[in-house]
Amino acid sequence: MEHEASILPDYKFLMWVQMGIFLLTYVALRMFVFKPYLNLVQAREAKTDGLKDQAHEQKLKGEEYRQNYESKMLEGRREINAWVDGQKRLVADKQKAVLVTARDQAAKELNQIRTENEGALDKARIELSPMVGEFSSELVSKLVGHKVKLGKAGGDPVVPRARESAVQT
Image (cartoon, rainbow, N blue to C red; front, side, top):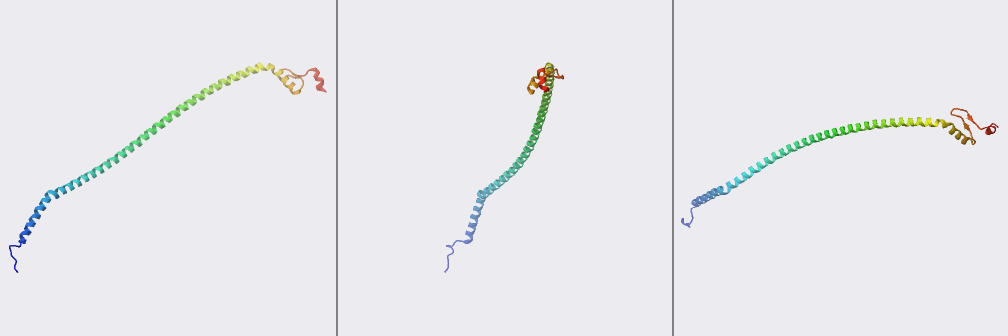
């Protein structure tokens, strides 16, 4: 059996037609799909890399700001502590001055009061020294139980005569 040549298509020709369609489809897809898609992927990667670099730079900058902030805070704390210490010293000096002034004033007042008391004591001694004999006589009389009369300070006791005989016996 013989095949008719006209019924069967030419395989070489069909292969070239399919190859042409494939190439045209490939070129069209490459121009309209693959290239824009690859360009988009590359742009996204470039943008991502740029953002990563930017983020890294920002992180380094943030770390620098943090270190700068911490150093300034440390310096500020030192300044404040120095100021507080200075104020404490000023307060302590003022307190010491007030205490010294108060102590001196109290000492003056005490000395004045002592002087006044010594003067009053001397005055009371002078006023009461003539009465010493009388008070001594009264005291001894109460202790002994009968009336005793003492002389002036430093003198001999004076015993009434009625009692002398009773005391001697």
